[in-house]
Length: 502
Image (cartoon, rainbow, N blue to C red):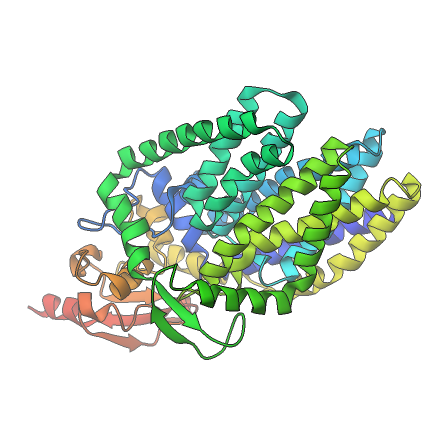
């Protein structure tokens, strides 16, 4: 058994390191990282008129990644953010696993070994499944997932200790999950649903005022910092205007016909997406239904079954908004992250509950670590495909370019390097790009938002913004990037060139 452990842990750490390198080259890494850095530097996250335009996501995600501002370079900040994801996953999911296994194994070393093996299996499944891989990305997904699962951890602690303080912490983390990403909103009432299933109707009713108080206090704090009207404009008015639904015959890809309609009108379409989801992930729904029913009927072992019941409640509460998000314009596989991560955890926890008490402990841990090594193999293969030279990651290239004294390039996708070099938060062009699709004339963005000495806009390999931003900053002409910016696409800002000539 110890040989398997000595093989499994280094293999897992190597996989995490390799995937961490890939994250540095992720075109979307700034979506989570830049708002966190901007928040820590005191920038206004939501300022549609005066700018800078920082993010279109909730402040909960920025709060989660704000400690990355302790780093001195984009490379360090990305590693910091990635480590926050890993530690958040280990502590939140690890706590739940430990609680399940603690009722079976009385010896501490066996509980720890079993928990570690399960964490390797869970992480390996998450990273190879496109809908759950986002837990390792620096994005808004993981903060929302972390806050949601941490809320579950505190609720499990409340069930065990019956402390009102733990229930308040549950409310706080559940509300932060909504402020990180909106599809978690229905899931924050899972404690009330659990109380109802346990026939504790008084507790179910009393939980709602606590939740409302916590949500009001957190919301008031963000509104006070960033302004009510500005926050509502970015997070809700913009989203409401972007209410375009895709009619297609496949769950994730294919030709779409985009139609604007409300949620009530879209109910038949959501049912269609549910059928496509069942065809793709029928085993997750089947296991979730069977596990939740079995856990409810045979709920003698409270630490085990209560976790399973609550995960099932979270799964069924997050599935409708996840499907709705997937049906909307611009969504991809990560739209199902909250539902499918819960489903994977339900599957694993069900297996643990069924087998851990039936198999001798040493044999069970032996099998567990054997499976852990088996599951980590695809993770290793993914890690081996990472680039060799992390110094050539886009954000680090931009940082070195600015450090050399050159100021002719505005790294709009995302301006992490500008913030870490000069301490000044600039507009992330992702915000005006998406705002231009829904409210093109309701916000301000112009060449005045670009550094005065910049003559080129740098964006990612896909070239985001090269067309839509011309409405605001004039003609953009693509130019070959210099060798030191090989992972960027450069566009000459014609209006700024003319201003210089004048």
